[in-house]
Amino acid sequence: MTKKISLVLLTLLLISALFGCSENKQQVAVNNHHIKKKVSVQKLGPSFDKSAPMKQPGQGVPVLMYHSVADGTNNPVVIAPAKLDEEMKYLKDNGYYTITLDDLYAYFINNTPIPEKSVVLTFDDGYKDNYTAMLPIMKKYGFRATVFVITSYIDKLPGYLTSKQLKEMEAYGIDIESHTVDHKALKELTKPQQQQELTESKAFLETLLKKKINYIAYPDGSYNKDTVECAKEAGYTMGLTTDGRWSMKSNGLLTLDRDYINSQFDMSKFVDRITNPNYKFNY
Ligand SMILES: [Zn+2]
Image 1 (spheres, rainbow, N blue to C red):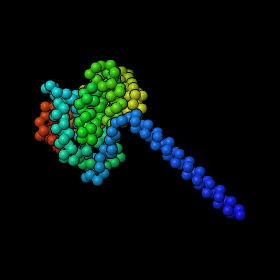
Image 2 (image 1 turned 180 degrees about the vertical axis):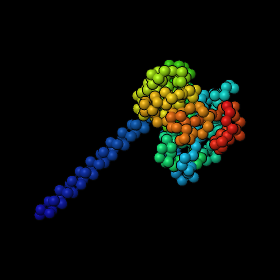
Image 3 (image 1 turned 90 degrees about the vertical axis):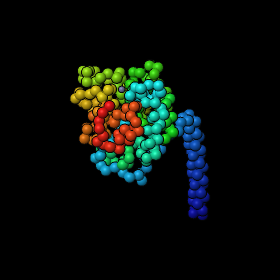
Image 4 (image 1 turned 30 degrees about the vertical axis):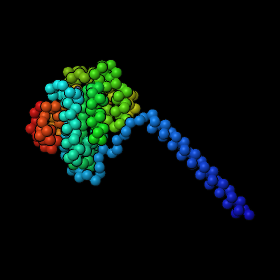
C-alpha cells in the first residue's frame, strides 16, 4: 500500500515537473522570439573553419589597414567600393579567413591555432561609409572586420558613424575598437594627455557597446614610450601602428605593425602584400 502511494506521488511529481519544464521552454521561446524581432540583423558564425590548414606558431599575420570606402577620389586612403569588393573576392576565392583581433591575440599569447591563410581587416577613423559601403561588402562575403573609431566624432561630425550604426555593426560581428578621443598625434602629447585619449575613448565605447575594449590603433601610427605605458595601464592588450608590415608577436603586442593597403595598388601588389611577408615596403 505504502509503495502504491509512493508510486502515485512520484508519478504526480514527474507530471508536474514535465509541465513545469514545458512552460519554461515556452517562456524561453517567447523571449527568444521577442529578442529576434528586436535585433533583426544577421549574425556571423565562427571566423574560421577549424579543418583549414593551420599556421605554425610564431608566424606573422597580415593585418590590413584601410580607411574610407568611397568613389570619386584618387586619395590613397579612400578605396572605391568596387575595388574593395575585388580584393575581398580574391580573399574569398583563394580560401582566406578574416580572423578577428581576438583570434590574433589568442594566437600570439597562447599559440591558439589560426588558419595559414588568415588576414585581419581593419578600417581606421570610423567613416560613415564604413556603414553604407563597407558593411554590405562584408555581408556579401560573410567577412569580419574591425573599425577603429574616434570617439569625439561619434554622433557629432556628419561624415562619421553614429552610435546607432556602431551598435548595428557590432551586432552583426564587426568589431568596434578605439582610435582615441580626438585623433591627435600621441607622441606630441604629454603623458597625462595621452592617458586621457586612451582611457576616455575606451570607457566611452565600453558604455556604448556594453563590451570590453581591448585594442587601439594609434592615430597616424604616432606613438612613443609613454603611449605604450598608457595603453598598458588603461588595459589595452594590443596596440596597432601603421608601420607597414605583417603583425608579429616580436613587434611587441602594443606596437604591432599593420599592412597598409593603398587604394591605388593593382591586384598584383595587393596579392604580394597578403602572400609575401617580405614584400618591398613602400607606401
Ligand atoms: Zn586615423
